[in-house]
Image (tube, rainbow, N blue to C red; front, side, top):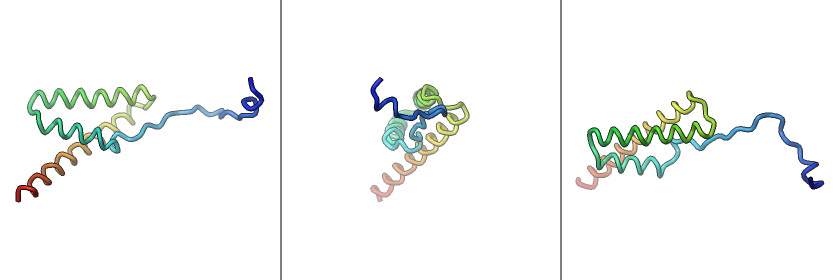
Length: 96
């Protein structure tokens, strides 16, 4: 081991990854909102479940606790709904 590495103090505390919140992932939010505008019914429901489950699984793999995963996914779902409302309002304003 090099002398430089011998002098490094490593934390005794367990390190953990803190993922960037799903509700702040604007490109993912916009992609989902756009996709959901173009599909309806069972197809939209299946897309939405698949997307949310994939996001949840990604967080679990990073070591997030189940309650944190649930809160993140719910916040993400809210942001997608807000984005869909914004897009709808923008279309109405453009038509007026």
